[in-house]
Image (cartoon, rainbow, N blue to C red; front, side):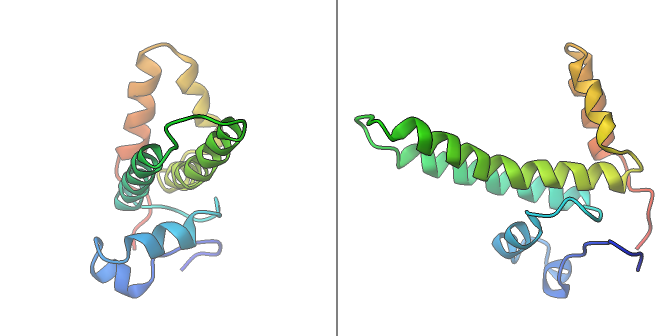
Amino acid sequence: MSRGRVRFPAQVRANRWGGLAEAVLSYAPTTRGRASRMELVLTIFAASILGTFAGRLAPPHPSALTPALDVLLGVLIALPVGSAILRRLHDVGRNWTSLVVLLAPYVGVLIFGYYLFKPSIYDD
């Protein structure tokens, strides 16, 4: 195992759909190591489910704290997804500067999606 490699625990590797919350929460704060395609998809899925439930729980009458809570929730949801994307880029042999391709209108998103979902260059 190479230095700086972040790996799923054995029980999550054995059953990829089990332990979703544990995997997302334990690997969310780090951008070091590598992430598989499955980890990226599970992280995006968990963040979208969390965002959906948080949107449903929002109070019907906005208060002065609502914008601050919305920003805090957005950051808490975006951090795990962002770190999973950076780890996935590392897994396919790219670095964070590959995010620049997103500045190209329309085609940038397609190229970036190709980067994220192409096969890993590292073997387990």
